[in-house]
Length: 292
Ligand code: SAM
Image (cartoon, rainbow, N blue to C red):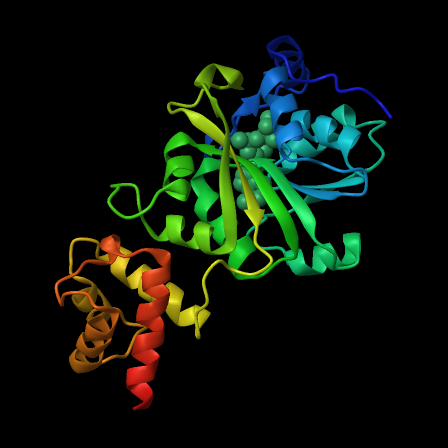
């Protein structure tokens, strides 16, 4: 097994120059150039020798080299075809890596996990493209891809959204979804100078440890997330109005009010004041009232 050669500014610039690679902003390309951060990601992900890792967006293969040395197998999905010859070069000798040329939002990840790990849970580890962080994370959770954890680099602000609760401006649909599916940990804050090119914002590595069972019980998981989306799509409206205005929900004013009374909340409460457990109680109360 080879040792990582990438992870510092000189070698990254040398690779980019060798291939005269044009960095694509539209693909959220910010390449890691700091060995401390790379080692920290690998350490935080607690990779074991029999782990199969899915890396989203290997770029020029920097993190991929580190993951290859720690895991049984690495599946790296990259959208930018111009990076394929570079990856063939930088990953030469890293024999447990399979590069897939595809858009992560379009491939069947269940199928991939079935093929590559017999359907057993994998670990997702990535320096994510920031323009699609939320759809990637939500997609992986909501489609119930078998996974143990995700260790991902995201915008600093997104990392705080994942970990916050009612009363904070950052509290929203992402906070509730992440907290329903996983326990989030902040691994490290990462400044812009750890990347080429430098992003305009700070970044952070978070690890999301997937729960075997969600921390709260709810009768209808789909309804729970429809309610959450409805209330944060119209954040400044009351919860009742948010639900009435949501095209995908069909509850009368009376049903909503009855459910709020059952919840013990005033009729003017906003969704942003409810915890995950309260959203679940509210979803159950709505169904109960619909059945009566
Ligand atoms: N892992 C590399 C590193 O840490 O240096 C690159 C990280 S860079 C922030 C994000 C990577 O995701 C880029 O290589 C980009 O081309 C790729 N990417 C962007 N959108 C993607 C998508 N929809 N599917 C797969 N890869 C994508």
